[in-house]
Length: 245
Image (cartoon, rainbow, N blue to C red; front, side, top):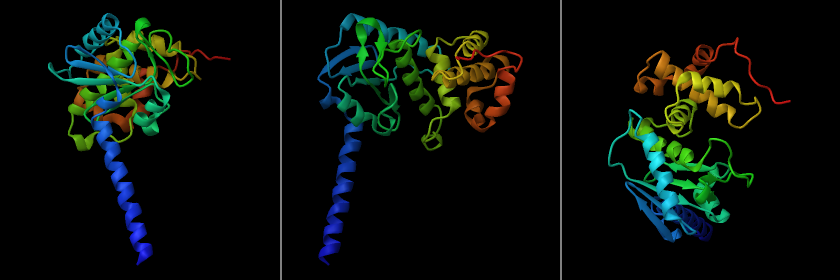
């Protein structure tokens, strides 16, 4: 009996900790002492937030997202910047290797690891700043689009694990709805062993479906298992890829 009682207390303790963790994912505000509101987006951070710079970043991200067919005015979005690595690990959980995540099941809260707001940049897992066109407003637009995707379908149909369709559409929007030819050109010029290869490929495939085949976005969600067929159409085999020796 004593063993069962102890076991029961352990189970209750685990359940209680899980409940507390879910609450903090739903309402992370107490862990972030700084706040700036820009339109429908509220940015929280564990460090100071330069108001003029973050306003410019949020406005640019919203401008890109507003071009999406899924966009709805008045959608509120909370963004939490965890510059402290321990805070990032806590809120990112199993996704700690990512640079940013959207907890779509928990109030669509967006979390970013360390940022350089003044220079519109985000740090990666390596500790280095993301380069090129991967600016902070790009990352923000990408994560905001995940919320649009979630709201575009019944909640129970949203995949527990992300896929090329979801990521490809987020990339398409985050890059300013870049056209198919430009997306294909960028994909071909990304080295095969680069981490961005997956995302540029997915963006090219989604851009092909939207612009060349004129596929409705609601149909694209169901094409996740047709990646091989779409890949052959979207990325011709006679196009040489850049290989990083």
